[in-house]
Length: 231
Image (cartoon, rainbow, N blue to C red; front, side, top):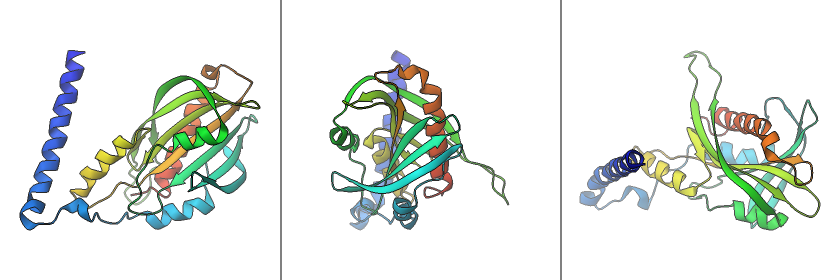
């Protein structure tokens, strides 16, 4: 535990040093880089995602439609795999360069009046296919919330996170620091909020569906990295 705490302190000091060094030129010039941050390069692709949705490997889209939750414009996809397992994918892509993730998970749970338990975090790695001419691929490590949710009519196994080009995390703070670091190089970190809801039997054991949930989450992250989040 001491080693882990020391590592976190070192990482914090490193990030603080990077921010301070990047801010010094702005201080002397009177211009702070994040007073007017650069535009998100992928913003048009992200806006387009709200109407097109995603093509997810090994899953068929049965229906898709826009959905307004808390005044925000999501897209809802009804999907199914070869074993007839059904799920919903809710995507909220960044629509303006100034948009920031703000814990949209509370809007979803409030809309559906969820009860929740068995909350934990899962970690998985997504890798994009190798593309010519460089034949290089990109790998991202994602941390996501995984829990059971239920209402009077249905039970789901839920996976949720903010997807970035190089990873993902359910906390807005992870995006905030990644974006601040990118701005030092005049870049931005685009994001998409993802909520996957897999239908399971009433108050069923989500550990049984966890492999399916991780596989689907990995495919969604990969589809985003090769599509609207591609760098």
